[in-house]
Length: 443
Image (cartoon, rainbow, N blue to C red; front, top):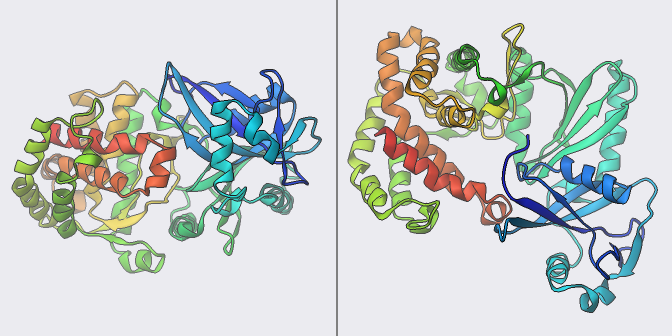
């Protein structure tokens, strides 16, 4: 989904399909790297880049990996990507060694990023040359086996460290292919398990490959929750998620066997104390960071936060499956049937269920729905799913008490991201102090 923001200028490293010593150039600005401009998108999205390359250079390409996400400068964000070409190629090529001295300064910096890796990529499987063609062959076989015939079009939508996602358009249906990294065993296992035990909560799996962590899934009916302004639909989705968690409350052994880690409340307060001492992660004093006063408030609140953890642990609600990334963009709702499907279980864990609402409530603001009444509606409907464990009024009180812990838990998870990941997706860095500020507002 497009978002507002600065122009993104994408410099492209395009190795020759058969000669690794050559890369593509263009001559509209002398000798330069190919480049395209786009509007802002999620930093993992690449479909718009491939579309711009096709429109500008008349070649089909996919993104193997990204090398740089620059800071905004004069309304422009510089990005650098490595592309792979597919099909006929009509580009001009130049030896890499010659370009070191011939390129403009900014292009040379981009090329240096590539050369620093010795022209190789040490990343997930989809960053390798030839991977995309192999995935397409597998998809074509599996769609035929499923009676969907050969795909009319396969389009790369997303490529980053966490996954590669392809849209597969067939004559009668649209499917989505998702490849996961070696660290994605939990998402693969949880998605397959949910498809068997709770088939209405995840997309139907058409085919999978366990050894490669590949999933081919039916497209979700309806729209993502972030595109919905009807609060009844939001409330229904919150209740459905809670119902899933209640149903999973007695399945901790199964979830552990699937690889889900346990996120215990007893570990949360020491982690928050560590966060309170990390001025760099909190960006103290920076425009997007916390203020000195907010930092002091966080540190002063540690005893109260510990009491809230004890209270939350004592209300008798068992740990359950927690999505860990319940942004509205990961929730699909069918407005006609009311069905709710949840995708992207990458961060699935076993935890107190009330720790997981933060992304969903943040999403209310992105959808222009952030009012106290709407927040209360979400929390009330979510609490209603847990009525076997108490009255709705009591549960709503517990959810409200847990809210600061939710946001701090979210801050901690983004703080734990690898620095290389954050460098390419800087919104992860910004979410740490943002979530802390929201936690302080709910104290």
